[in-house]
Length: 285
Image (cartoon, rainbow, N blue to C red; front, side):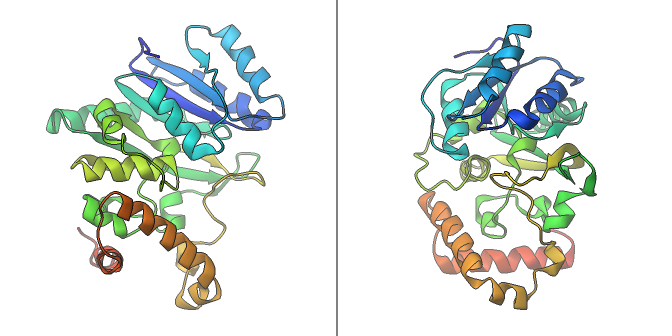
């Protein structure tokens, strides 16, 4: 399916009826309007599909509900839409957040700057987020600070061993060149966002962060993934020892994903973590 709009926004839904109207309304309030929303539902048991159909009837030239079988989870659901939709640029969209009005405009401005500096390059831009509760009250002003994320220190594929989160999917804008990097079979992909960023960097592409929150990242009891309840500052050696099984599983799955893309040995992976922490301590790349 090919859109005549500049940006294809891809939204994966599953039992998202409760907050879906707020998210779609926030898209309709965007200052940048050259986009089309594509939604694919993963087999919801609630009224999610009815909500989407209602908006599709109201905005037939702007919103489309894709009709094909459920994919069995958000990672495969998002990547399946990426396979089926053709556009110059793409964004991933969760079903339960709220986008601030200038989110798309700010991201596209940065994309334009990056493409002017590196013509023909595969590029992903992404932003910080406000973490909010179910009522959209801000609990943490910056997800990057809360989770200890430093995107400026991950510039190449070799750097990606430093942290298991390169960018948050619902903040990303990426060009068609980046999509083309993502055609490797994604059997080891943990999530769509980290997979796309890793594939882009593996191709020698660019991933750039914007140090401004553009999303109200809603945390509630049914999040598939979230920001995590623990601040990065509280993740001490003792904390890791107490949660050794979780730390092991997270690093194992992430490393297997990296290895499937040709990252290298486990020693290189841990060396990447050490270099990442050294960059943070020094305050420069």
